[in-house]
Image 1 (cartoon, helix red, strand yellow):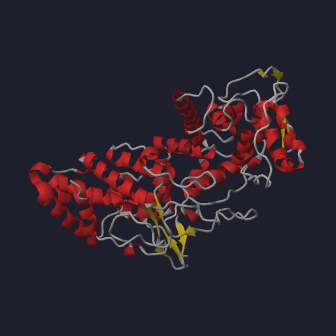
Image 2 (cartoon, rainbow, N blue to C red):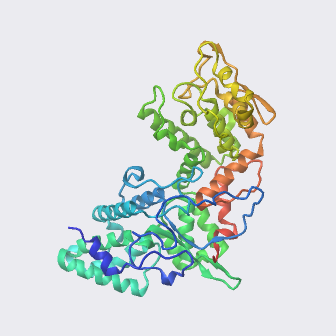
Length: 499
């Protein structure tokens, strides 16, 4: 039996709010339509790149409603109800902007995604463990018990208390559903409605108007922002209670909450998830490599996650991640950035330049053949690719790429060490913008000495948690966990600008 459409009708379908609307004007229905000020194209906006010469980390972000990313959605359902979903299998892929699949401007709800949300909300509601909210017996106390449970359940799902109007509407819905199917079934179908609402699917960053014309996030919005920022999931009951008490309204309360959340094991997991975006390890899901198995893919990714989690818990810095080669020698990184068989100096050079130094490379000139040089058994990979630097059309980019990519010539398509390249002696020397090095370990050392490495990591981390471009302060080194923790202390974390 499918009650969700009835639930939608009873609660009222008023459409998605614009980012500049006030909380009071937010709709009371589900989130299965796209906000009216955007088109349902699921494509990135054209103006996505930051100004190359500007770095303003103090100006607040605009007021907005920010849809949960698929990763956040899955973590939330798991933490709330113990229901595990696979976002890559169960949800339509979101567009990727510069390697980020959580860009706030492109997280829209297509008709396909809306249908998937509906289906998942029903599945989750019927399978959910409701015991954390039950202080009565649904079988014995019936509707009275379900009505008593509803406010607390709704607070957990919507990350704030119900308004009086919302409570009245949802109570009426619950009574209608329970009359036909019983109290527990009625409560579960009401939960399905809560899970389809924009109040669940979207994070509110609208704030309350201040005298200076800015908007300050409410206690409930702060709890949500803190939890998704540091843990990648919904606030738990303890944090919601802290929001209810008003203790998040001042810097002391925020600091105490950050200290507590950063001790949660999920904080290290959050930064491990960040590493997948930072290093573009999602490529592991689809790349074709000789000898690569599905078990290899899983083991490689787990190894990176373990390295990052250990770095967080030990207080390591970004530079520490590259000691003695470090991340550069991880099979996951070398496999994700390579070719089906061989070393892939161009792909790995681009990885270093764009992902570790945050320097965008221009596209190849029009009409240039970008295919790899033909295999010539009389030449090494390095000798074959040397033509890039000799061709004036190619040299402008490849002089930035190849001297970095050749550092990995000792590593094949799966990151395994090789002494020779098709019988040829390997030359793994290179230079990082004039700084010479020997091999991947030498490159790692050159990167550690270059402040662009840590600065790039900070920029990547900030964009990942903010869902939009945020530049980075220039730093020589920084703790792996520091970009997330320090951002919370910035006024921009809780302030918003009217559009």
